[in-house]
Image 1 (cartoon, one colour):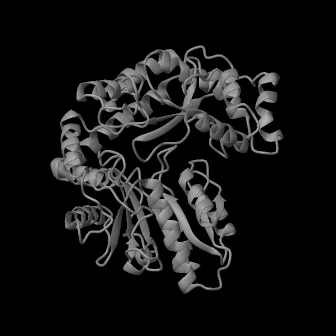
Image 2: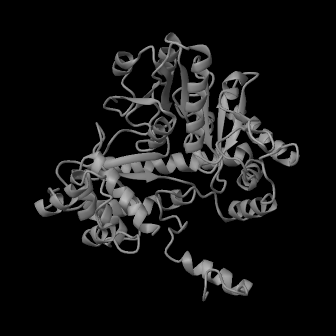
Image 3: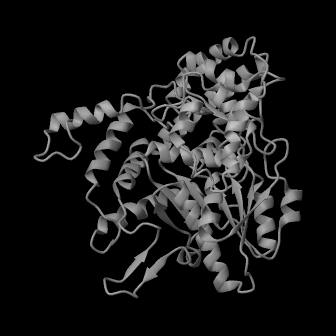
Length: 478
């Protein structure tokens, strides 16, 4: 394509070819990716594309003008309330993703507290240190303080620490079902009881587990209690663009009672245009992904989701067994679902291990140490890569053999990264492009051997990692 914005317009073939060229380096959904991909198979993908296109023109901004938006969203809410075993009178909203669901859950808790607990002047949100980063984002955006809760050796919220940090200003207690990094469910019953005792709301982040855990339970897997059958759980989020197999982005935020959802809404009649009421942070609201999500629920049915849950859980157990039987590696903790983390057993370099997987054509997710969680390799198992788990397990034995010892990054590299903490402006005065070049990052892609960069970032404090990530993102879109 000669110009992005040509004078006379480009032809269909040329445009589609250019878009295809742009995607040549994208992560492939071929069963060799163990992060980012949630694939139910080509037949389901094809139907999702058709449903998405069929709903592209619907704007959820005004469901009185587009009643189909109401029909589609109500159907999704009803299905998810059933999955979450919600009581009569429970309600929900479709959002653009798990982050928006979480942000709205925090907003609902904050605004509900303003109405019912006026003595709360410094709202706090109690979140396990394994809780998703979007809770930090929500607290930052909404003027709440995030209070981190320690975790135990199984990477579940430590209830003694949660009780010690509970206060009159806590408006919301959070638990994961499961946590993304380790695939374990927090002690939801104990957290919900603590929240109820102190007059706080309780949110369950089931974004990644909401469409899997109910079906694992039906298959006889011992799933910890996590849904609305737990007294004290007041809201729950489920991502339909993860294991609901819909296109990005559609999630659901469910509330036990309508007045809690009312606190999530924003209405404005104080301007010269039309009066508005928004259920989410968006004004104009695409219904395309919602339409595709509804198509997936109806196409796969409970049997289809149950069968995929079985396939993923069987693959998870095989991978867990392979990790336990492979010298030099160990599970961080035993997962409750088909997400897991493993690390090296001893002093082996976990980032070299991740590079070796990449050399053999696997995409895994190297993850830095934080709190009780060591640096590790994360795996997300979906129905497509589940078919390749045995191959990944065989390569694990090869990749884990004779790993070099983990070493600290060179002093010069640490000093270079320390510039981010010494500029006084968050790194704004640094030449981001030059810094990326020194790290070997070109065109927004890590070098083929990424272990040196990962080792460097793992050694850096979280605030330096955050500044580098900000510079990296800015460089990508400059």
